[in-house]
Every structure is written in C-alpha cells, then in structure tokens.
Amino acid sequence: MRQEEVIDIRITRSKKAISDALVELIEEKDFKTITITDIVNQAGVNRGTFYKHYAYKEDILKEIQDDCLEKFAVMLKNNYQEVCYSNLKTFPLSDAIFTFTYAHRNYFHFAVHHAGFLNFHLQFSAVLKEFLIAKFFPTARYSLESQNLLGAYIANGIYGYLVEWDEKNYTSSPAEMAQQLTNIFLLDRSIVSLPVPELSADKETVEETH
Image (cartoon, rainbow, N blue to C red; front, top):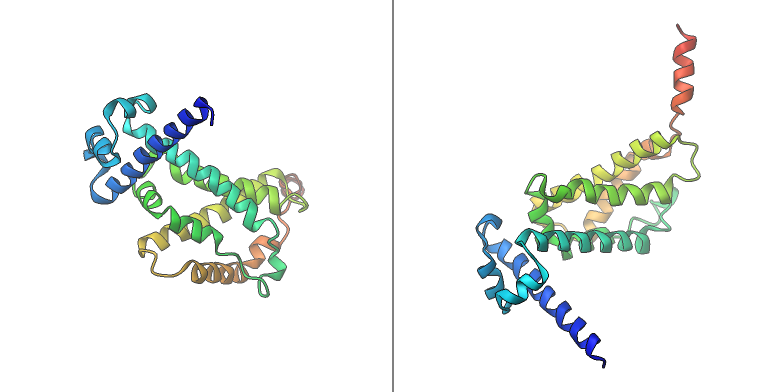
C-alpha cells in the first residue's frame, strides 16, 4: 500500500471518529453546550487532529449533512427509479426511504428540531423534488412551473411524514411506514395523475372571459 493511501485511510478514520463522536454527544446534551474538548475526548483524538480537518464544530455537521444528502440521492435512484403509480396496489412503495431515515435518525432528529439549521428541510426536500421532477414528470404535459409546484407539494409532504415518524420515536417499522405512504398516494392519486393545465392556457381563458 502506498504512503498516500495510508494517509488517506488515517484521515478518513479520524474524521469518522470525530463525526461519530459529535452525533453521539448530540444524543446526550444540547449542541450549544458541546465543546471541542468533549468531541475529541469522545472520539479519542487530540485537538491537533480536530483542527487539521475542522475549524468549528458546525463544520462537522455540514459535512455530515452533505454526505447524508448525497447518499439520500443515491438511495432514491437505486430504489425508486422504476416506481409506477398505476401499479401501487400490486407493488407498494419500497421501504428504502424509511430504512435510510432510521439509519440516520440521530442526525435527522437533531436537524429537524433546530429550525433553519443549515436549511436541512429545504435541502432534503430539494433533493427529493429534483428526483421527482427528473423521474416522474418528464413525459407529462406539465409546464415547468407546474412540475416545480407538484414536486414541492409531494417532497414537502413526504418530509413532513418523516418528521411525524420521528416525533413518534419511530414506533412503526419502515415497512409499515412505506405501506401507509402507499395508501396515502392511492387516496391522493387524482393529485399526481391528473394533468395540470399550462399556465399560459389559464391566462388565455381568463382574458377571454373579460
């Protein structure tokens, strides 16, 4: 193994130890009260190692969030690429999004309960909205603005659904949550299947009536 590879492995291990330590500490105490000393002691590294990688504890959270959202996007692509609304009764939604959220529940809980922190809500919903627009709307006769509105509606609804799950301390299993979400989509199918009129056509109709 080359020296560069050894160094990279050490850096990765150190950063993981630090990020894991912060997530563990968040479970025990308020983020504002957590010090750099707390983090390095929990991680088993020295302060010098911490400052080689981060300037502030907030930098760790941003890195965790960026990594989480990147993995979230990959998970969506790997598990929901072939979803078809017309077949939901036969093939319910995968529980992958719930399994993913549960695996990251400590950070998710922290992020959703600190309003505005790193714009987690907006960024999480944006990743989901982007996937929805790319996967479900390209062949539909929707205006771009209609795609954005419908994507935002669904993405924010799913985010709120996950927050509710967190509020209930994840008492339902990922499989149960996936089935419930499937049922919601089946009840709400008219919203996701009916054509949304082009805004330009709407304007012409309004003009004709005046």
